Image 1 (tube, protein in one colour):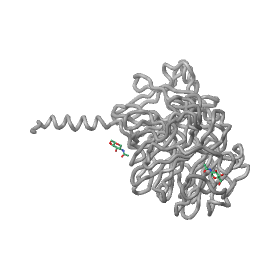
Image 2 (tube, rainbow, N blue to C red):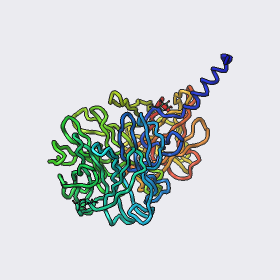
Image 3 (tube, protein in one colour):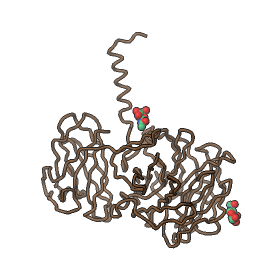
Length: 451
Ligand SMILES: *[C@@H]1O[C@H](CO)[C@@H](O)[C@H](O)[C@H]1NC(C)=O
Ligand SMILES: *[C@@H]1O[C@H](CO)[C@@H](O)[C@H](O)[C@H]1NC(C)=O
């Protein structure tokens, strides 16, 4: 078939246009969609690599309630493009996994001996009084899984839990036990169908939501404290053996940041570093909870979360790269309405802009764009106990609304991402026009070339 040259141009253009919305970067806290364009519902997730494919299991919270609707299963080869597969586990009435029960934090291991995928999850009743684990098995990664039962491991509570597979296929259940007071690690049997014995207890540690990364013959345990859906400063512990002795707790990030408003769900090795895979829970609208994945930098020998608005992984090389953007201070913008200059040591350069909304706006001028969608991070403080939001408009165009979780205090700054279409050349970005509530106090914005 002979196509005129211009027609080939059209084909190439439409191919590019089709894929222009696909991401190449990880943007923590953004609304992540799957390859069909649906919001990814895989909260409290677990990950398993099979060959070169990653599988992501999680809680489908699209009904915005606590009850069990499905353990979803997604697959990806790049940790960025996720396609939804069949549900791995769905409710069975009259059992501990009915649609009025709780199924949380699904984690899957592959059992080599039986050539079987084994899923463990927190299995409970409404009110979380049962505190059990549930186990289900399948012959393929996404199953569907066959439910085997729910019970208290060795007769004791298990709530928020994780799994860890060590060398030689020895695996462990990591769990909040004894009414969330004692954190325990128990060895699994050879089939991964049950636990055999508790190998470590961190007494009185009130930890949950655990994960382990092994690095240079040392084990690093990551866990949050127990504050429900509210975030807290997540911790890490080190030990020569899974059975301990585990070091005293250390912070994964500056404690006031409350782990960038997130809770650990899974920790994945990446070369000599790692990836923290957390949930930014939104308790009032659970299905709109977001994923907060951040690099874990081990370059000092100790793990530290890297603040990253936009970043990428090279899975083959086992490396990560954090994008650098261009920063514009809020106080350098044009204030209008009731917007006020604020002075606080929490802000970069000690200044920010408050009273945004209800007529108050700030416009940041001369933002150079590249003529496409670009990620922009809003750095803000929200000292309320509930979320705020900010409207953003480019060159006087229509507004998009960005959610702003509470930051714990007016002195603590977090960032939230928004994708904006900037024209090539100079743009003006206005925060809080057409907004009848107060937005967070704005410290600065950082504009990335990636979109
Ligand atoms: C995701 O898929 C899109 C479309 O196939 C592709 O352009 C993009 O490079 C992929 N991202 C990564 C990180 O491979
Ligand atoms: C798990 O192991 C415990 C202790 O050995 C045992 O009492 C219990 O029945 C087992 N549960 C299942 C479901 O196999």
